[in-house]
Image 1 (cartoon, rainbow, N blue to C red):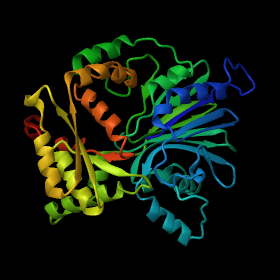
Image 2 (cartoon, rainbow, N blue to C red; image 1 turned 90 degrees about the vertical axis):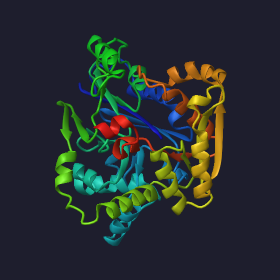
Image 3 (cartoon, helix red, strand yellow; image 1 turned 30 degrees about the vertical axis):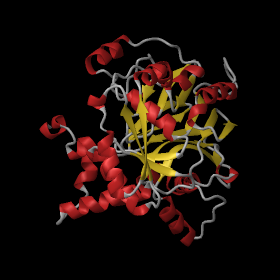
Length: 382
């Protein structure tokens, strides 16, 4: 993952400026450093300041530095995420005579925006949160992927529009830490705060499949992707089982495009087992990782993960946690969480990510598979 942040003045650029916008963004980037340890970049033009913390995955050279400015100097972009089909998009653009100075998906996405405007989003297959500044019009465009895999927070304060990958970035740029009473009620009812609201007044989550247009006149939200409409445009398959297998295999294959080591999380459940098995088809010497509980054998399912790993031929690592390990990481987990989120699996997942990072940079997971494939009784009931 990477971290993005930025500000846009909703008042005159020469008018009231309580804080230097570049300084605001730098402070936000400091809060987001854990998201991108490899590089940091800052851009400031007109009403806008953009910042980026980079985790290098594709084209790890300096050519992938962000904010990424197009060759004409009109557009600047920050991107958190990955465009899985960027190679196909790039090949098509090259065939049309376009030239590129990097091997990044960011440059391909920005080039498409310069050609198509916001409609370019429909060409992208991936997960992303992005912001693009148009220097000529002095306007800002933000967008989030179809299903909201990558986060994007925004708010307004003291005449400025603010955005960040995490809520702490908004606070670093000046958004007050004021608890929202209505969201507090929602949290105690649902054990999380449903989007677009948050635990803090004024901090909003851009909804999946939505984009934001920001100018001196204010901000405007649009929905660019609607799942029911998309479903209606897809013809019914004559062989649903084969189609499903092909879609799953393609989705996994695309996520393996990286210039850094890749592995998978493997719990032994239905979802992660499917993802790991498909990954093993396309990735030689696959490394898989799971969490076990040394002091709580009732909850320990590592034997299932090890059986799957043996079956698919992966090099498997099990991190066996004690209760002391869990206790030692409570404070770290809370520090890494923007707002209350009452899912006990967050703690072992947090530790799994920490320990896996020592061996690979990218790890595929099966999150979401249970909902699709009926992994638990509650999902089958739905």
